[in-house]
Image (cartoon, rainbow, N blue to C red; front, side, top):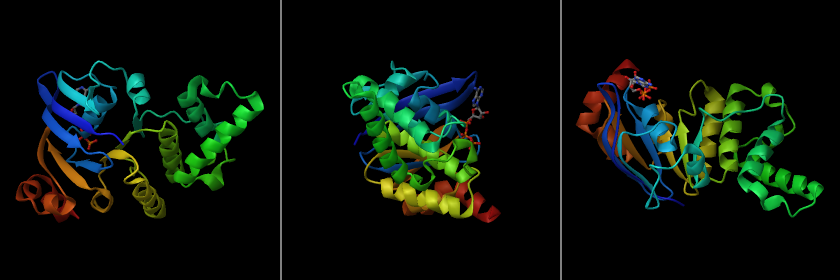
Length: 250
Ligand SMILES: Nc1ncnc2c1ncn2[C@@H]1O[C@H](COP(=O)(O)OP(=O)(O)OP(=O)(O)O)[C@@H](O)[C@H]1O
């Protein structure tokens, strides 16, 4: 399991400092949630971690190794997977085929010593294991286009897991997912806890406070607090800037 360290990270769009000197350590196996009001810079921050967006300055270290000069593909190869915004699901392929393709992309040529039939069997077996982790084993033969929104999200999770990430970046996995699907998703993430280091951005505070080991609160590009869910919930700065408002609105 990997450790992620962010040092003095910066990103500005013109005069707007969207990531303003952010430093943060995500410990191995930790589920670290980043919360904050709309426009706080959460999505930008995750995009900087994944390499989708270049950073202006600062450093991102994966187990001590700087990722700043690494492309998105190189970061995935090093074990940093991002789920939910850029994964491409092939709608006319089955659930199993979608995951098998992701497994194949990770394995590269390492299956080549198998005969094609054995290669397919090995790919399918690995893909089925990943599908079970995402709670989709019963849907393996279904066309991806036939999945419900919640199942679609779980397929995205499975595709990310197929790359065997050391660190999983989860960008609003519950957006648009309601009721039982949301509960099922939270249960899946709970089971992954401790096995993969995870960075979670999520607006659903119930889910965040159930799942996170630690929470960081981002407001106008700055982290104003980091701590356990309870400590963050009680922090007067956080209540003033964010949670108080949300709770009052609720
Ligand atoms: N490509 C861009 N060019 C200019 N401004 C941008 C760009 N991307 C984001 N911003 C601005 O940066 C700020 C942070 O946006 P970001 O999407 O990172 O926030 P967020 O915390 O993820 O918000 P939300 O919770 O609403 O998804 C916003 O003011 C947004 O308008």
